[in-house]
Image (cartoon, rainbow, N blue to C red; front, side, top):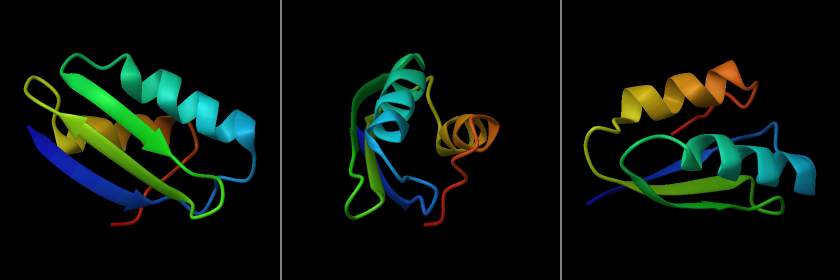
Length: 68
């Protein structure tokens, strides 16, 4: 299991948190997604076939570009 943490400055409300959890959670291999409006952090646990590259591209696609 791989665990990554991102700083996502575009998180501004509960809807943002919900969207990130829903979209990233749909990726095959993702087992857990935690997102915080207060800290603007997203923590994702995953196994293959999910990759950091796939996760990051989905975050960019849904307008929540991450910073490591």
